[in-house]
Length: 196
Image 1: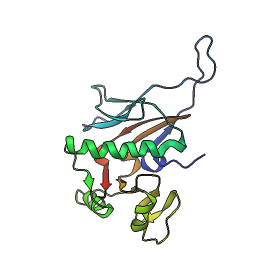
Image 2 (image 1 turned 135 degrees about the horizontal axis):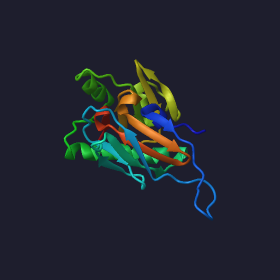
Image 3 (image 1 turned 120 degrees about the horizontal axis):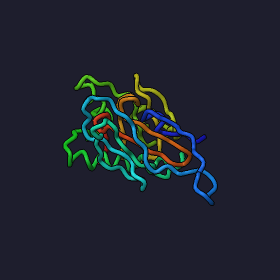
Image 4 (image 1 turned 90 degrees about the vertical axis):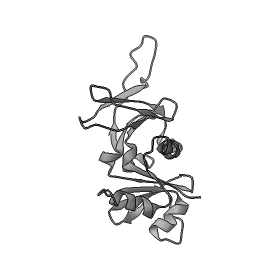
């Protein structure tokens, strides 16, 4: 199975494909909507995937359920969805005054420390990984190593972007079923780095 960056960034739940029960149809059913029961603590805005590979703002219902759509996305296509996540977080952070924008990975880590939280995952492009890891050569895609308690993951993000996140169980959830993926993201659990 190809490397999945979301397995390091988010809490992952895999569900099995179900048989399509419609008369005359064969194969597996494609999921369209998923939902996750959240705790009773008040959640600020959440980002959820839709069926078009985009992220939209959502809130939990009065019953404490948050819904998300499943996007077609094979494990090989995850960098496209990851770039969409980074872009959505960057753009929506200004509109909603989330205060999650940073100009460098050290600044992002320090912004978590300033509020008593600990960054656990750093997702970077190969070019940015050189400075984060202090290496001369470009590291390969995938798990690149650790810096303190942080896991550094190198992936095909645009070279001027990086994501710094809390522990996966605090950052959000990812549900994969076959070549479809649905996500529910807590924006406050991320810092988005964009240089020049």
